[in-house]
Length: 413
Image (cartoon, rainbow, N blue to C red; front, side):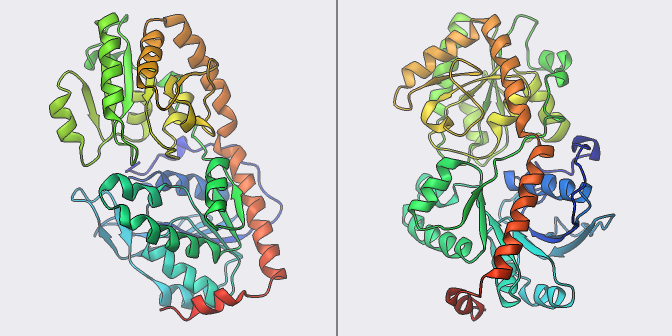
């Protein structure tokens, strides 16, 4: 999500914790950047503040006019950054090891939480190791697998080696799903703890449905809005989505395909799918309205995404059509709030999409169930889990001597 979220979008019912901690949270994207880690870091920060912790947020600057915005329970340290995309939305922070070492030696945090593995995160890792600070990390993407889908398969092994070394230097690594935990464990990652990806159930809600927006999409009361999150980072399967929609439209001529998101290949796809509605980049209330104005979501991902799209759709009251292997840890269940097909059976995916599009009562029932099922993923229930991991990390760090591999890492400049 690319713009700061109004405070009203953050749950306000976090209960204060027993002990206040000073937490250094280091993240490459924050709020305005495009990756899912941006909104996750924002939710964690706000939740910790509301539970009476002090958060020191270390993030890249968003541009020449960006300034730190200290407030109650929060101080910000902005790192110089470079943009990886022409639109400036993906900014990567430059290393700040010397500055962080100086800052943290003067005022030691109780725990350092590094949410991303870029240059800024690596420099924070080195500073934390040098000062022997309790350290936890976050693994919430399939970056190590994306290389295969972006034409550079030879990067997969080096990327995995870097990520394994990075995360194994910490006392704890948070992962969003049990499937990823098992995968990383098999690759030699250690000290993995599951913290599922939360969803803002206050922001994403069926109550945000807008007849005016549906009218802009060319839909009347009887039209079916078939949503598709086109900018999937990896495992793109646009063909399956398009073929499914073509069959949907043959049965429901008033249906419209609405493609959410902005990504490098969007313009090329839009030129091919002339009859679809492309929303472009949306965030916050705009994105919530888009989800709420949909009637179903096509999710033909070929591998786990961790980006929260299915959670946001479910919170908005949408039934999902997806491949079953990808949904092992997603908040969807076949026949309950979603319709699933075998990953190898695109024809079955299409049939299930058509069946859902033609059955308004099933969409209503599954959508209501999806909303109910996803409520347990609200951030007000997940922040205490993160808090518990911080406490365990502090206890482990105090009881465990510095491993030899840490001493080696300290010499890296």
